[in-house]
Amino acid sequence: MFDKVLVANRGEIAVRVIRACQEIGVRTVAVHSDADRLSPHVLLAGEAVRIGPAPASESYLDMDAVIGAARETDAEAIHPGYGFMAESPEFARRVSDAGLVFIGPPAEAIAEMGNKTAARARMVEAGVPVVPGSDALVDAEQGRIEGDRIGWPVMLKAAAGGGGKGMRIVEGPDDLPRALDAAAREAGQAFGDSRVYLEKYLPDPRHIEIQVLADSFGRVVHLGERECSIQRRHQKLIEESPSVVVDADLREQMGGVAVAAAEAVGYVGAGTVEFLYQDENFFFLEMNTRIQVEHPVTEFVTGVDLVQEQIRVAAGLPLSVKVSADWPRGHAIECRISGEDPLGGFFPSSGTIRALEVPCGPGVRWDGGIMEHFEVGLHYDPLLGKLITHAPTRDEAILRMRRALRELQIEGVRTTQPFHLAVMDEPDFRSGKFSVRYIERHPDLLEPREDDWQARAAVVAAALLEHRSRAGGSPLQASTAASRPGHGISEWRRRLGSGG
Ligand code: ADP
Image (cartoon, rainbow, N blue to C red; front, side, top):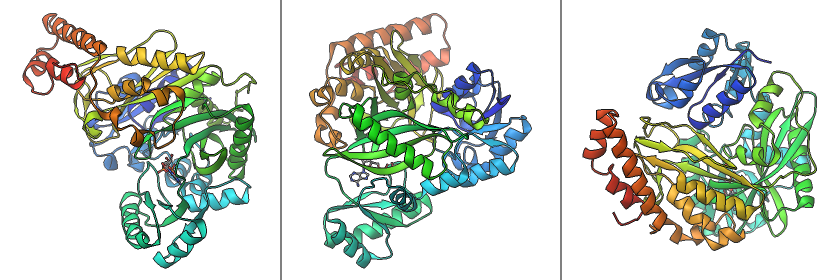
């Protein structure tokens, strides 16, 4: 096993990886930008190295700075988390060239899966069903021909795509030229690669993905599915395991295909094979060659620590997973708590975390990247933390999530918490009848609601703040709370729609 691992990330995933290391006796190094000097991942790690100013391009994306920090601290391996450099074959290569271990798949596997058209071609070869589509388009004329062949409507997607960016639905051939120009421009700006391709647009699919783990001894296993259909603008908001539409037979079928996909590219480590599911058919969408945000739901229903398995495998050890016939055990749900205002178009919200109370109790897990006094800025992804619940049945996991969401108190920035609470009470979500279009079909979820728990929570928050300022809490904190408009107790009530 490694003696010391550097975590090349920030926020909740850096905290998650550091915790995994600490449990298995691996020492940790955090890296941070100036904006994150005082953040949970820095305080939790054994050592911390400053790698640059706040902009990610000058810190968390600076390969030399990150590799230099590993050298300087004698770390043997680098865990990239997700985002930033996690899916950069160049970074994986440079880490190995520096004599360090990249905790992730081989650079070739990242490269093969990173380009969507190449990955699709590879999957067709391996016998994996893919969404019908085209290769990268040369021009609009070719796009028209491909669209006619595939059948309209189609979806334009960036070959180098990710994070739901650069996708466009094209209803018919007349709309194609303009959409193609716009999509190519957007892809160029976002990914430095303007190649786009077509996929058949599925009108009402579910997003279901399979977690796989592979070691360097040729063992590849799957750990069942995650249902990730609750999305806004193609970005996941709520995930669960198992999916209500997947039975044991379908799980084995999809799991087998996912294992074949991983084997086809010589995969090692943790990966996710994503599918669209519609009318009892499933189609390969893409493979994410890293740990996913939503990995905790799989951990709850299998008992496997995915991050520790990643580290084991990277250290050259075999997987320690014992696949069990009684997986999935119970039901797990995750709500992504972001610093975004769900009642204001999910506009990013910044500010200082003035108070933070995280829920606990049976079957509740909080994977967070914030703490009191932490300054939430606009430099990075708005994810603040994830609330995950586990219970014997889906209904109980939902009730538990509702309870936990009510206990969660984040003071100082607007968060997606009220949105999640509304979903937990919504009949279609409760009955499991939804697709990736769930949010567009339920615009009411983005309206303010009035609930008596919110009034109670506001009173508790008010008392807490008052107690802290009286007990000699930082005068700065007390005066900030009182004087800054839009950040006081009445604001909290307003935000939760409890009438002030
Ligand atoms: P990204 O890599 O940018 O996250 P994905 O290919 O994983 O993009 O797709 C993200 C989401 O976009 C899917 O979960 C689904 O909601 C939607 N989507 C993608 N492809 C299609 C398609 N062919 N038809 C309908 N919806 C799609």
